Length: 188
Image 1 (cartoon, helix red, strand yellow):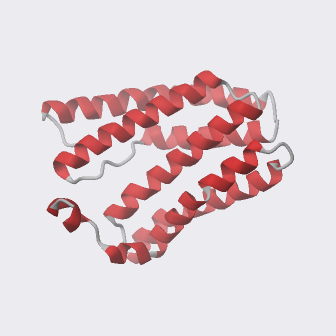
Image 2 (image 1 turned 90 degrees about the horizontal axis):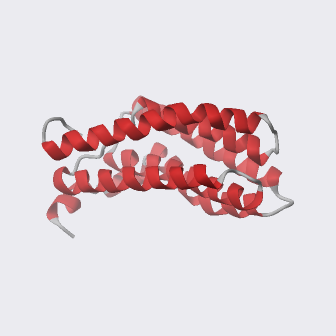
């Protein structure tokens, strides 16, 4: 393991309550997708998604209040969000008519964000943070996915259409961030 990575990883951060919550959210991805894919388990899927949302709402404020904001938390929190949203979008596209083209765009955007963040991390060991449009996209997309899970149409489609605005803005902002980093004109 390169010295920079070894110096960056702090095992005690795994015991921070905020990071434990993020790790729980990561562990919930599999069961969430499993229950979304099952025809008779929308309520179970909804319960797990709501539990995951609760951990997401609490982990950041808890880390800040306890003075335990960590590089590990900055890494696992957005990964848990992306894996959950991507997994649910895939499952809903398979089972509940969620538009495949949106799922493909979401997967492409998240793959690009992760690749860009990985390249930046490899060069700087800095974890890039999410941008406002990305956070807004996550919140709105979560609502749309929940409405699709509950078969609440046309509201799910309407919210999904509205989500395309911050989604497109986030694509551009993340691209600009990466472009500036490549050119060395701005910090990641």
